Image (cartoon, rainbow, N blue to C red; front, side, top):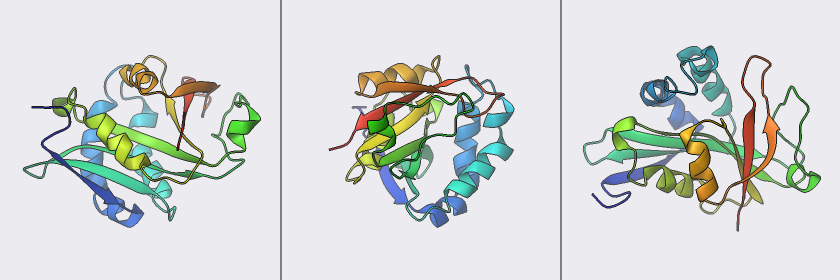
Length: 181
């Protein structure tokens, strides 16, 4: 099958996302049971649904879902805007250059593709659809330094601008940005 074909992409707002939260969780949990996440409590059902429920309240929250021709959820990506001056909560106090912090940003919170659908260009299609037409200056995301996706983002043009540790009991993550046109 050629890259990214065989899937349809659907855009959802926060309310629609909450209605499909169980389905989203069903592919999130297996993905975060793999190394380097290894089903740590932060990546468990309770914390994921708690975070996602709160994030989905933002009026500009957006989720892109990829479905197979049979209607099966194959992957998703979602995020929300971070206004000028806003940055990740970081227990270490690390921040990137002021021009990044002071710019408007769209935060990619999740990009998950079910294992059976990986290697087909679907992740790239999902993130492109999520960011297409965004008015912010930058897109940003956090990536675990040892995750397979970390190198993928770099190949796609994302640049590391800081190390961020959102909680004392988590590993530091690489904060990456992508200039939006």
